Amino acid sequence: MSGGEQKPERYYVGVDVGTGSVRAALVDHSGVLLAFADQPIKKWEPQFNHHEQSSEDIWAACCVVTKNLRETCWDKAGHFFDLPDFLSWKATGVTARSLCSLVCKWTYSAEKGWDDSFWKMIGLEDFVADNYSKIGNQVLPPGASLGNGLTPEAARDLGLLPGIAVAASLIDAHAGGLGVIGADVRGHGLVCEGQPVTSRLAVICGTSSCHMGISKDPIFVPGVWGPYFSAMVPGFWLNEGGQSVTGKLIDHMVQGHAAFPELQVKATARCQSIYAYLNSHLDLIKKAQPVGFLTVDLHVWPDFHGNRSPLADLTLKGMVTGLKLSQDLDDLAILYLATVQAIALGTRFIIEAMEAAGHSISTLFLCGGLSKNPLFVQMHADITGMPVVLSQEVESVLVGAAILGACASGDFASVQEAMAKMSKVGKVVFPRLQDKKYYDKKYQVFLKLVEHQKEYLAIMNDD
Image 1 (cartoon, rainbow, N blue to C red):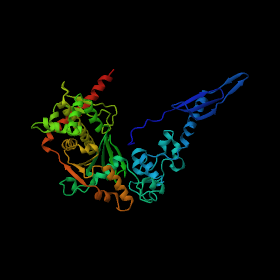
Image 2 (spheres, one colour):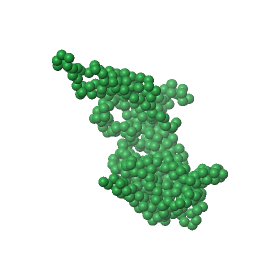
Image 3 (cartoon, rainbow, N blue to C red):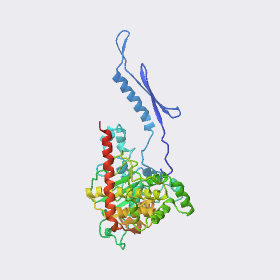
Image 4 (tube, helix red, strand yellow):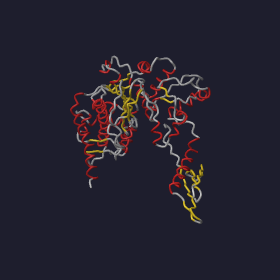
């Protein structure tokens, strides 16, 4: 949640196997007993003063009491919601779920519905009971109107009028994609102007990044989530790639450098952010060459928190090659540049995997905090070889959410119509095609880094 991470509650189960019964208690972190359950165990007396019990029966009793505890902190739950659906329910009193939440976060199929066998396999078969009432038996596409709109209570809390339309929701990254991917691009000299919307890739880049591509037919991309039907744009299949850390990685590399205190002082003196200062410093030290060429002998593999796409390997680690003894501001600026380039190279890696599986992508649509950084945007254009479209409105996630509301109100006939009307192009950044050869070489090194990392691991694991 946006308010910051909350420490999860910790609970403990104590089990006592006695002569006549098994007892169990649920105890919280402070030692308070919250729930209790017991179950008799069988005893046999085959002859006088000779007693026997069954270990299998004792284990079965342990299982019964533990399940009973769960069903006691468990049966009280009326509904299980993802956050977007919880907020919709608070606003309208309607328990309908968004197709986006259930398809992307749960195991729901837009075509087949819930899979009973999965819940039974993991011991949650009670979710199947009562026609899935606890997890959702009414599923609506994003933008569909919920019930009668705002309840009087919710309207009072929000300072609005009762009955205002409320839309079935989207996950935040998906709302960002919706807010940019359908913009009317006429007059900007973009190749995607004469192509279907499936030629566009929305990249929502902040602490981490999501790469949202849509298709008319399902496309299965190894290492990329989906395809999910109607999970972002109704009627289209969604594939969702991602990078586990992007903005967070840039912060980590910059703030951990020995020259960071000097950077803070100088940026503050100029009333600039540290990244605006670094960008201007790079322009100062690049001299006559393109700024990206400063990293000719410095390369970064960006998976400091594992790889989400397209390798789907959480064991991968970050790599930096080409370090020197210098720790001055020039060194920090070039390491920052190499990190930004590594993230853009990771986006190229994801795009190539999507295209190899059947996508045809020609244009990137960026939104999120990192899209405000001109170096980040230019590196994505140069390294992918594709133009980057930035939205007129920086807060594209909010525009995407408002598009849903506009559809729920009935002001537009479809989400696609609302996207074309409400999404606006702000700026287009074209790639420096004259630098293509350099970035092709950087990409070759990028792929070698992960190849070598796997070789190192194999050597160390070899008996």
